[in-house]
Image (tube, rainbow over all chains, first blue to last red; front, side):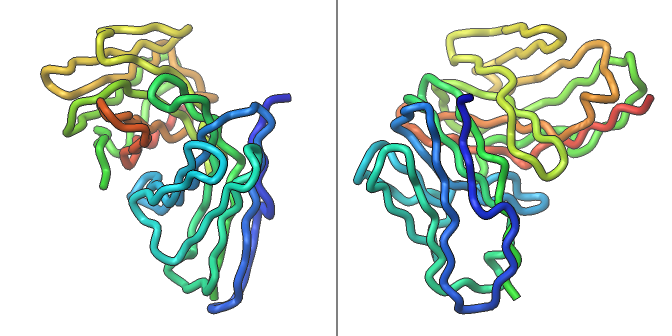
Amino acid sequence: EAQVTQNPRYLITVTGKKLTVTCSQNMNHEYMSWYRQDPGLGLRQIYYSMNVEVTDKGDVPEGYKVSRKEKRNFPLILESPSPNQTSLYFCASSLIPRRETQYFGPGTRLLVL
Amino acid sequence: SQQGEEDPQALSIQEGENATMNCSYKTSINNLQWYRQNSGRGLVHLILIRSNEREKHSGRLRVTLDTSKKSSSLLITASRAADTASYFCATVSEYGNKLVFGAGTILRVKS
């Protein structure tokens, strides 16, 4: 089944404790992206990747890191999480985004205390 | 920065009625996409309409695009309780690759 998976689905952590949220897709998509969703703000893009070893900042990259060592995986890293990073995070993938829709993962709900 | 702005923010209708949601955007686009999100879950793609298209249909969904007004509308006909969800428009700019979302419309269909 074609899908985007994220882990973990729920995470409670404390300020400053490094964490990684994994994202994997099985559709051989070149384009992958991370979004955060906050009430009243819709989805905002954090980082995106056009292909392996090619990543770029989205609209809200501060406090996040990503890597794209393999085509199927695109982990999101929070080196020193802060409470303002409490949010619902989505990973997405697609072929060429200018022409194709994006497939979204189920989301990761993060609470930073 | 948000490109799409949905209107209304929330909509409550009776089952069987039609629901119309509007989206406005600011810059020239390559395409505009509509997504649905059930509470706290991932987004599901509904329709993609390209800048050279004016109308598209998919089942009970009808999307229109007016590039001169930089606006789009999503019409759901004969709504069902299962249509209760948040609906988002998202745009891909004319020369870019990013998908930029609006804040969404919350639709509640009462049975």
